[in-house]
View 1 (cartoon, rainbow, N blue to C red):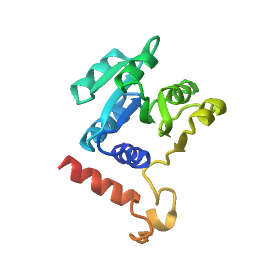
View 2: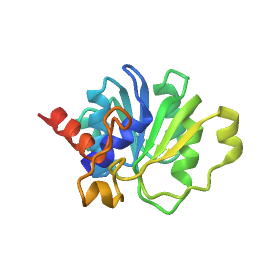
View 3: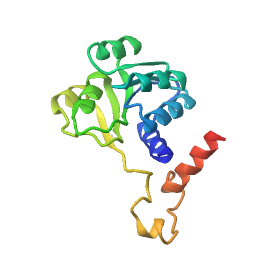
View 4: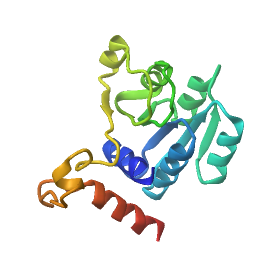
Length: 177
């Protein structure tokens, strides 16, 4: 899971000081919150479970709240009225609600990364009007599901593929150390 969270963060391309919302605060979401904080981001966590919201706050989230009525206003207020620079969806639900929510709390030209197993019926008009980027994350990163890479050990050239499955775990372990 740590490399999935790492790849999710890399795909969002967060920069120092950006405001990022993490939707879904299970194990993957909790690791994602901590990686974003280590990257210098402001982080707001969202979940349905109050214990997961409390844990995210304990582990470094700047703010966190229960999903439901008032959550969009809370994110907007927290982002100083601008909306989130990026929304990372680490939730697991067949519902399309996390994708809709991500679009509603993103700033103009914001980024949405879906790593969790969520419904992907993208509300085109909402994403169009805000010109949002949506990326669906592959687990672990380049190399995953490639027999040449995974089974035969043929690495991708560093100059062309900076972040592979192995390089993601290497960087994650460096951060943990």
